Image (cartoon, rainbow over all chains, first blue to last red; front, side):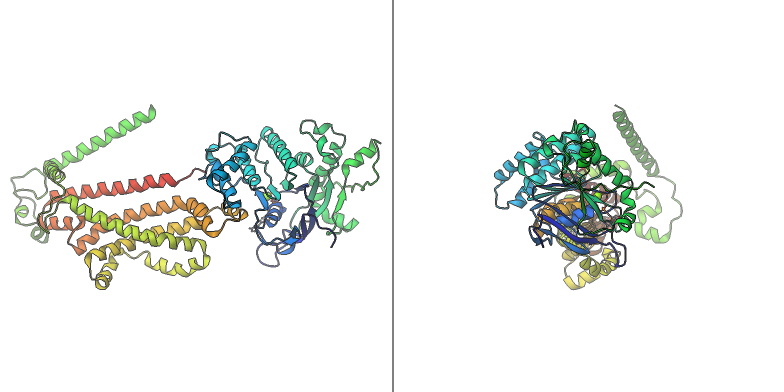
Amino acid sequence: MENRPLISVEGLARRFGETGQPAVFEDIWFGVDKGEFCCLIGHSGCGKTTILNVLAGLDRPSGGAVIVDNREIDGPSLDRAVIFQGHALLPWMTVMGNIAFAVSSRWPNWDRARVRDHAMRFIELVGLAGAENKRPAQLSGGMKQRVGIARALSIQPKMLLMDEPFSALDALTRGMLQDEVLRICADTNQTVFMITHDVDEAILLADRIVLMTNGPGARIAEIVVNTMPKNERHRNDLHRHPQYYAIRNHLVEFLVNRSKAFDREVAEHGFDPRRPKLVKPGLMSMKLSAVNPPAEIVPLTTGRRQ
Amino acid sequence: MLKNSLRLRAGLLSVLIFVAIVGIWQVATMPTAASGPAMDPEYAKLVGAAAATGQKSAMPTPADIGATIWKHLADPFYIRGSNDKGIGIQLAYSLGRVLLGFGLAALVAIPLGFLIGMSPLVYRALDPFIQILKPVSPLAWMPLALYTIKDSAISSIFVIFICSIWPMLINTAFGVGSVRKEWLNVARTLEVGPFRTAFKVILPAAAPTIMTGMRISVGIAWLVIVAAEMLVGGTGIGYFVWNEWNNLSIANIVTAILLIGLVGLLLDQGLAYLAKLVTYPE
Ligand SMILES: Nc1ncnc2c1ncn2[C@@H]1O[C@H](COP(=O)(O)OP(=O)(O)OP(=O)(O)O)[C@@H](O)[C@H]1O
Ligand SMILES: [Mg+2]
C-alpha cells in the first residue's frame, strides 16, 4: 500500500444485532492526514457517531479496520482524545476534578500540585478560570462543552475526535468556541476528525469534508476539499469569500438531494468505494468568474432533483 | 413567607392531633366504678385479675405514661440485676446488634453487588439464589442460626445480617449496572485501569443508589431486631417489651414503642444525611 495517512479507515462496516441485519454503513474508506482538520457530514442516524466510536476504539467494527500510525487500533488510547456528543462530564467532580482526572490518567506519576497546575493551564485556555471549583450542574451548556474540550486537550493527544461538539449551543457561544478550537488546533497542529450537521461550521473549520450518504448501508459519497485557504476563513465574513457559495451549495445539494439517492448515482456513473472522489467545488466558482482558472479542476458532479 | 405559614399551620395541626389523641385516651382510661363489659376469658387470663374485674383499667392514662417516660429518661442506664436494666442499656444492646449485623452485611453486599452489577455471568449465576432467599422472613432463619451457632446473641446478629443484605445487594448491583455508558467511555478513552475506574467512576456514580439500599436495610434491620429479641430473650429492647408484657406494664411498653420509633427515625435520618453527601446533581 502507498503512504498511509495518519488515520486510515479501510473497508469499515458495522452491523448491529444478528448477522443478516443490514449494515449501518459498509465499505467505508477515507483517510485523515497529520495536522489536517477533517469533517464528516451526513444525516442523523447514518452512522457518524458509530464511525467515531470505532476510531476512538470504543466500538469494534463488523468488518474492515482503522489504521492509525500504521497500527490497527484495538482499543481506546490516550493518543486519541474524544469530545463526546453529550459533554460526558463526571457530575460528582468539579471542573478541576474532571480535568485533573484526565491529566493524572495521562501522567500517573505526577504529584498533585503538578496535575493541578497542568489542568489549570487548560481551564484558563478555554476561558473558565474562576469556575474551576464548580460542578458541571452549575455550568451553562457552553461552559460544559468547554470543559469537555479542555479535558480532551489537556492530555495532549496526537489527534482529536469530536462528535458534534457545538451542536447544542446558541449561535454566539458556538462561534466563540469554534474560533477557540480553530486557534488551539492551529497552534498545536492538531489532527482533528469532527462530526457535524452544520454546513457553515464545516466550511469554517475543515480542510476536507467527508460526505456520508444515508443509511442503512451508508457510504462515503465523496470528499470535498475546502479550497478556501485557512487564513481567509473568518466566521464573520465567510459568506463574502468568492468560493463560499459554491462550496456551500455543493454541500447543501448533497444533504438535501444526493444523500438519499446515491444508489442511482452509483448505477449511472459507477463508484469506487476505495477511492472516494475528491471534489473542489470552490475552484469551479473561480473558473466561472474567470479568475485564474486552476489547472486541476475536478468536475462537479451534478445532482439530480426529484 | 407562604412556605413558613404552611409549616406553621402544619405544626399547629400536629399539636392539635396530639392533644386530641391524648384527650380521647384520657377519657377512655378513666377508672370506672361499674364492671366492664364481659371479657373473653382467654384474654382475661392473660391480663390478670385486676383488669378483668374492671376496677381499674390495665391501660394507663397519658399522665401515667408521662410519669413512666420521665422515670426512664431520668435514669436510663442503671443495671440492677440481669432482668432489671435501664431502657437506655436495652436500646444500646439492640442498636449494637443492628449496627454490627448491618455493618457485616454491608461488607458483604457492596462488593458482591459490585461484582453482580459488573458481570452479567455472575448476575445470572446468583440470580436464582437471590430470588429464592430474598422473600424469606429473616426470623425463619432463627432456628437454623440457633442450632448452628448455639449462641442467642450471635444468632440475632446473624438474623440482622441476613435481612439487611438483600436491599443493599440488589441496589448496589442495580446502581453499578446502570452507570451511564458515556461515563465509562470517558474512563476507557483515558485508559483508566479497572480498579481506578471502579473507585473513581463506578462507585461515585452508583453511590446514591447504594445509599438508598443501605437506608432501606437499616430500616428493616431495626424492625426485625425487636422481633428477634422477643424470640431469643436475654437483653435488648425487644426483650424489654416482651418482659414488660409479662409484667403487664403497659406504660413501660408504650414508652419502649415511642423510643423504638425515635431511634428508628434517627437511624433513617442519619443515613439520609449520608446519602445527601454522595448525591450529585446531573
Ligand atoms: N448499540 C446499538 N445497537 C443497535 N443499533 C444501534 C446502536 N448504536 C447505533 N445504532 C444504530 O446505528 C445507526 C447510526 O447511529 P449513530 O449514532 O452512529 O448515528 P449518527 O449518524 O451519529 O446520528 P446523529 O447525527 O443523530 O448523532 C442508527 O440507525 C442507530 O439506530
Ligand atoms: Mg451522533
